[in-house]
Image 1 (cartoon, rainbow, N blue to C red):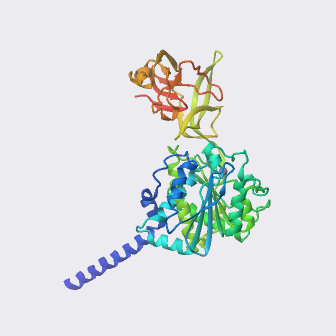
Image 2: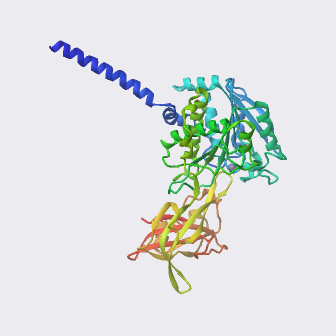
Image 3: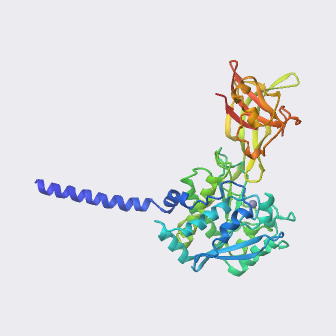
Length: 479
Ligand SMILES: [Zn+2]
């Protein structure tokens, strides 16, 4: 009896081993591997949301000599910056992706640079590369509005929103996009944008980190086979993203905009997908959202290449909640604020406004709402019911520089009730790393009051101890 038992054990172990390998191969799907290997593809020269022409120009020019890439100058912006058309793949299905037609919406441009890097490498995802390059011809316009990107603004150099110029075609940028579409006649189009970080998903508290839309091609929002395919592909992308940002995918407003490119592309017969990059927790540089773009686009390309998107069902698209604007960066509830001899119990919402510098943004806090915030949500929230508000003071000494001021530990200033330090010399704000106090020039006046649009600094004090400080719209614990 012993021998057969051993034999059957051997078989059980063998079959289990085979089954396990089969299953794990099935489960470690494309997105899992892309996620694991992403750091190898992430373009290291771009690290934040300030993406201008000079950031992408060397990354595109260096591909001119590479066999896999075809780099063309599709045309020029009003200020004569090149607008590139980059092509890879020799397949019969044509896909066109265009990013940053709004100059201040760079997230997808970063992801496109990562995708270029992906196609240059040779690793265990070689079968995916081969599949995409043999089935698809992929065309990229990585920055349709370089003049707007230079100014970090939505519109182009003459103030026109390119995405409202799809019919009149007055701007060279819109003409380029239209001409490229007419010439290539892509079956698929990816319209890549950034949206407000204050959008949340439906009625939930979660940010809409990515919003999708298969734009309507008429007022009645009808669904023809073209738009239906775009909706199905979105279902596939949503399924992937739910594994990384559960509950953080929404649908962008589907109101028909007759002047916009997405809506017209759909009308002209290109299955068009809008991807809007929004906010994510602790991701002010947008690097996690960039990765989500990379994953969503790569997985979509695979589903287009092998046709597997057809299995998705429209009710799953319909079920994706719409964007709702109900988020703030910081909400502090039950703040006891003294206004003209009276104490009011109010909620406060702060937002961080991004201000572009040379190489990065810096952020300016701003009181965005005062009053009942019970229907809103914050990336961070804090209940100040048990706390007393103590307004921060400006230190009387005028320091030479930040280095001079920080000879004294910041904790000491905070313990004495100071939140603002005056300087003779100020570096560009994007380089100031100390955020527990506010630095101002010695001749600058600050308003430390609770008015809409102001940026008050104050302490939250409990049992005589200053536990938190709010400076520049950020709540920081005092150690
Ligand atoms: Zn946009």
